[in-house]
Image 1: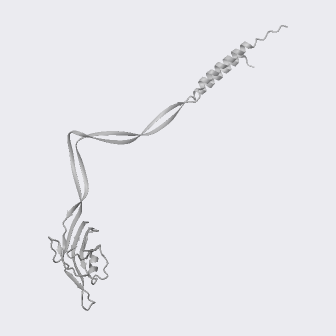
Image 2 (image 1 turned 45 degrees about the horizontal axis):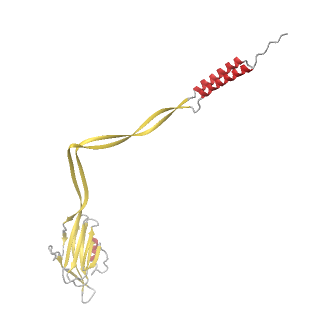
Image 3 (image 1 turned 60 degrees about the vertical axis):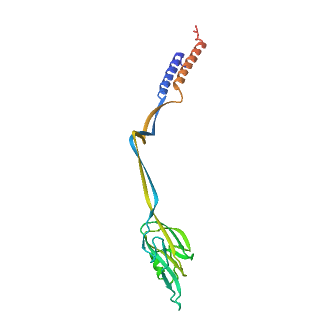
Length: 262
């Protein structure tokens, strides 16, 4: 067994070795990269600002017919059914159809408000036809078998709105299978769509502050140090002190061996 001085020396150097080794493990580091957004503000001073308002409005248009009824009155809008057809398959050739028409060249997509009424309150057929339908009507022989139209109303009077499906020539057709003895009154108003723009400029003598913002991404890199979860240095110093105390106690309790005489 080692002597007390040697034991104390061994314990002391062992504890110092552990203390130096543990000190190298006390601190460590980690790298953290963070992406942040940097927002910048720019202020500009101006002396004028412009406000523009754009809207779509309906503008009245002049209705121009390429062809009208032969007795059409432009001022009153009245006319009579000037054309007649007789049934060729009857011996007496009775009257089978009275009609008249207006040829309209709709070059743009207008909205038409149409009003008509008959003087004798006799129902009439009012049709809006494209040119193919008009040709079909002309060869139908008293409108027999004719069934195509853009719009068809049978009444002594009517108010209607018609939107031109596409630019082209159209026919406003009136016809009746019986005699219509009075005038027919026709009133048509066209409306075209127009883009209306109004601009107003504000001016000041002091200036108007206009604030604008801009967001720019940026990368921030930092290194943060950390410490070990256990304080080894404090633990080792305590162990050395305890070892020295134990050795001191042992030295006081163990008596020195007496010398034997022969």
